[in-house]
Image (cartoon, rainbow, N blue to C red):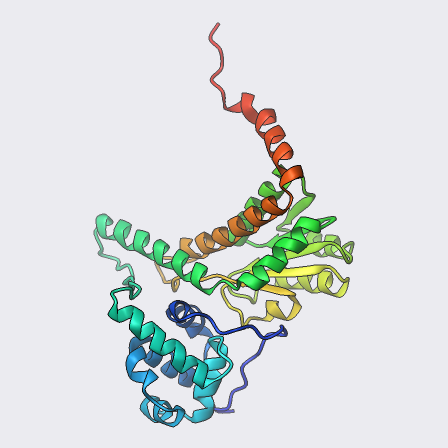
Length: 310
């Protein structure tokens, strides 16, 4: 099957409005690596020259990128727009932002001979860009729904492997401190064993940048089948994990390289989403959360004080 007609997985979720113009560049950076080569040509073209592409018909953009009209339409949909007309409107808006000096910066890859000062500058810029991209592309409708489910949950399970498990533990620690029952699972067997016990009224959260981590997808699938509300935090909204997610929260990250496996930006973006979830839940459960948080501070205060000298 040629790349021109390769079918792209569309998540099983209700349609949502296309992202605002400021989120378009972030969408291209996040989703580009998972697209077919022909779709990547369309995505790169609209990101590099939004004004020029906004002036083109679907036929014109197909000719410019050496693809087909069907590929242009599929690319628009993968980027989050109902059709090409909606993408053109976003391109026009992005072009206007760039003309006003609001164009997003692009961080160059780190080279093996870069001085440490350049490494610091590039990493700092990349982190800022990833956070901005994540915020711009985050579906606040799904975020609100996920917050509501977490706030009302009888029990919360969070799944993450490797670096994503660090984020899972961060979310669980935050939820525990405001009085919610939450557990982080890194062992895939234990994760599935716990997922079997979930039911309606419980929540399962899967954290996977690639969207393809089997050890995270499997317990989420079990939780989904058991009737629990499921949430996926992922950098690949076209990944397999979203098949079993009621709510998908997309993160942005820089491309990983030889010098940067498990790039920090993937965790930074995930942690932003975790903080948004926590603050939302704390707001909704404030009457119970505030005393619980105060009690946890008091219980730990002596561990942070200087020991008295004899």
